[in-house]
Every structure is written in C-alpha cells, then in structure tokens.
Length: 497
Image (cartoon, rainbow, N blue to C red):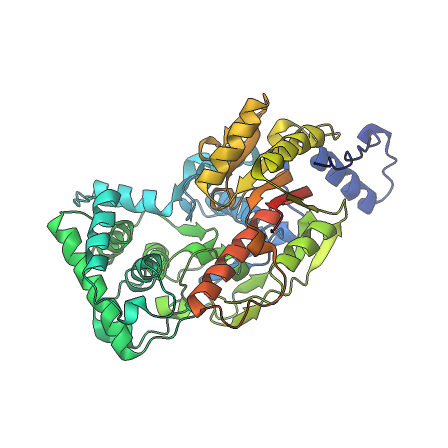
C-alpha cells in the first residue's frame, strides 16, 4: 500500500500581531481565531446575516432552509435563546436524532446560560414517550415484538403477488408501513389508495395497494396479539392525545432536520403552538433527506405564506469539500417538504478554500483500516487540530465497530457519537452518518464506503425503481457525511475487482 503524502501544516500569525484597521479585517481575525478553537466553539458561531435572521419575527409558521454548511442548526440554536429571552416563554427544540439534543443543550449552556432553564431539548420520540407517561397513557413499546409481528405478516403474504414484484424486499414494505401509512396516520384503505406517496419511486396500482394494505392489517393484528406498540404508534398516540387535550407548556417550537420527520411527527409538533406568531420554526434541507418516504407541509395543513427563508452562504465547508460532495449526488432529485421537485445542483456562495478531498481505494479492508489510522494520526499534527476535532463516520454499525477496533488497537482514543454530549473531548469521535447529522468536525474520515455509491453517472436502465430509490437515499447519506467536514475530507473504499 502506498501511503499518501503527509498533509502540510500551516502556522497562523498570532491574533495579537494582526493590525486591525477595518471591519473586514476584524471579522477575518475573529473568524481565524474561531477556526483554531475546538470544533464545539465553531458550532455556535454566527455571521451578521445569520444573526439578523435569529431576531426576525414571523406572523405564523416559518421555515429556514439551505444546503449543508449554511448554518441552519446554529441559527435555530440562537433563535431558541432569543425567543426564550424576548418572549418570556418556554421553547421546545426537537429533532429526529436522539443524541443531537444533548449536544445542542451543552452548546446553549455555553452561549446563553441564562436561557437553559427555558429551553427543552428533546428527541421527538423521547418527547412523545414522556408526554404519554405524564398523561398516564399505557405504552408498550416493544421492537422485538414488532419485528416478530411483521415477519409473521410478511410470511403470510400471497407468494408471487404484488409484494414480490419489481425487485421489492420485505424491508421496502416495512418502510412503506412505517413511513408512508403509519407515518401519516392513515386509517382507511381509501386514504391509502388516493395517496401520492411522496418520495417513493415505485408506482402502485390500486390492486397492488390492496396487497400492501392487507400486509399492514396483518401486521397491526400481530401487534395487538402481542400487546405491543411500535415507534410510529408512539407518535400517533401522542398526536391524538394532544388533539384531545392540548398542551399549553410551550410558546415556541423549533424543529431541526425537519425533512427527517414523518407527517404525523410534524402534525404533533404543530399542535403544540398552532399558527401563532413565531410559534413553529421548521429548519431543514430536502436534499439531506436520508429516510424513505416523505411528506409535504400541505398534508399537515401548514402554510408558510412567504415565511420561508433561504440561507445560501456556506461557512462550514471549503469550496473543495463542497464541490466533492456535490459531485457524489450530481443529478439526483428529491421532493422538498414545500412540495416542489428539486435537483441537487449545489449552487451557493462558499467563503473558504482548502486542500482537495482525497478518495482512496484499497485492495482490502485491512489495508483500508491501516491507512485510516495513519490519516487520523497525521491530521492531528495540523495546527489547531486535536483528537476531538476529528470525526470518523461510516454507514452501518458493523462498519463503525470494525473501524473502531482498528483505532483502539492503534492506541487512538475514541468517543462513540452515541455517548457524545457536546462537551469538548480529547478523543476521535466515531459513529454512523445518521448519528452525525447536525454535527461538524474539522476533519472527517469516511470509512469503508461501498464502491457502488461512488460510481458516477446514471444507473443502468435495468435497475429497478426500488433500487434507484435506495441508491438515492444512500447517496444523499454520503453527501451528508461529506459535508460534516469543515477543513479536510478523506474517503476510503475498496478497489472494485
């Protein structure tokens, strides 16, 4: 294996020696000092345009969108503090990723400690479970029982029917139930028969939908026999509870990564504040959707009426990293939650430049792991970079575990992302791409990337619509992973035989 050339280090001029004569030079010096600080300091940095948006008032539900690196999450974080202070109200800040609220809570504690008692950071499932518990609603969440009920329902299907057509799999139809049917709270077949199925490529006839509905009904019956609930049930039960008995606790709700939520989740959160001024702020980016299915705000009954704001200046990524990430999803399409079709063109303003990302192909995974260890050791030699500024990401838990074994064997300290709470730590952060959503790292290493995901051009015409859909989701997840990198990006994969 040929070891890549070491990364050149750069020694910055001390801030005290800079002649600050203009506002631009002051801003540049401030930015330089923040870039050298631990990544957690950078994650709460606002530019002047973002600061204005934090204080902007909306006369109803609003949305802040923009591609990766444009500062959506940090705007939401500062907006939570602003609303808590100015409105003398309680704020709920929620998202799909379970561990991200802990990180944001710690960041808020550093930038606005006086507001921490007025802002609740909760994952959406944690919020729903706590609400039901406080109201005495019996919840029997049992994922193993749910898996068993689904397997039973799947095995009882008519072999060779619609559910076995077009290259579909058991997993595809489980996602259809979780994200499309239960994700919308659909109660009748008539509702499902007329549904647009946003985000799903495979077209279904009415008869095919009948087969899907029969699978869903068998699954629901299996859950009841097992006296069990699944995760979509938790959301639907909480939503229905709020409809019957509204909660007056919150004056504002901020939703980060809103595109990852289901229709029922957004409906639940909307019911907390309705259409009151500055009540609901949705933050997200359709091109970072990495879960199957989707929804539009019109399905929830939310109208933005001109209350949408687009951030188009990327402060996080260098131009080289962003161009590399955009190349991974060039030409892909997605449907935004506002209902419009979009293409991943990646046109925006970028403020920084840096070294080009590297795509590294290896003859074996052990060779890949050895090079990854070498790369981690090398990047921490850069001025202003420590172990805690490095993120090692992979698509699956198995890949994360194999990579973690290599790092630990080399004596490199590691911090699993499912244990990271936003406090600076002198250890390499490692976890799945999904767990890294909303986070940033100075240096990112993408481990054990499947070669097929890095292929350019359109897939062959023989590829099924369901496989195309999975490919789109996986490529967007790769895009998310790449854009977590602020200063440097390394991608490792196997050479195709």
